[in-house]
Length: 441
Image (cartoon, rainbow, N blue to C red):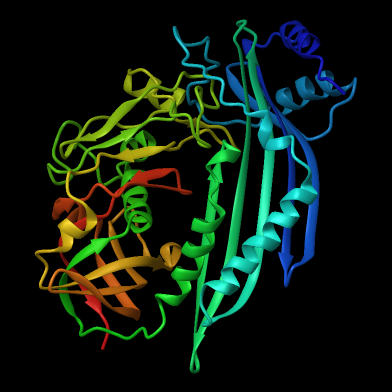
């Protein structure tokens, strides 16, 4: 049933709300996976969610529902009043009137959701066959799967603001095992896109097989500090933890590494980081959950901190403009969107060629337990490869990488040009750190 938005705003006005807004999202998805060329999972879902907020007696009230009927507008208004009545804080309550300009793009490709699922199942079988045939050491293909989704959302408020977006995306994924003697290693690969023409089955099968095979024969290196190269996914993990300190609320609470660091150095001059949600990819968005327009902006420019990230509330406290980073949940928080690390000029091989002895880290584990973003200290299990005489050598496993985020990003020696867009919403090349402590044997 279609939500009666007009009635909701009329009821909000009649109940003397200062302002109100409503966010609606609709998601349809199809997921399937195979095991030994047989379908072992097939799921079709169709879900709706609606979040309404209002300012009543100067306080914010919020309610979310997943079912809509003719009584929903009245239910929302009553729930917002109850919710607002329980609020005891005096934080600013703001419904955003709207930005001067929004950078809306058409990123919807109907071809993503127009094909028959049976065609995708046959394609998954071909992928499994190619993975198995790639190398005799591939002992198992644990799963090969496909997901596609259609998402549409809207945000409207009592000031007349109306924003809408629509997107269709798809993903292929596979998990495999490689065995040599008694040693078993696993490999995993995900490919996500808006364009069905971008998927290369042969390349995908090769990469997931290699991910497992290249780990065979892993050993531990001698414990000491090495020149260390971080693969793009590892850069993403550490960088997003570091940049979580950009949240203006944490700065205001005096619990951020970046207190008093605005327009000051927080990293090597080689590092420039840009947030840009306006690129035409699966992370595209042109407004945040509060209705603030998203714009391309520097977070770190040549090592200097350029901005904190704000919600409407934290921006009001600091007397600045919101930055388009509001994420509405039980509470509105500032969150980073898609970030881009400016690449260097050297290729990966050129970057590692001067390294006599170093370590290339390809995987980091235990981020939740081993990372303290507020202090910057981390100790993480890792996998990777030795670098000897400028080339990748034997694989490494059961090693630990330890350090401090401030020190890591201030000791960047080189940034390569091998850019990779990660599922963590980070586009980054590999980065060479002068020295990192690696614990092995």
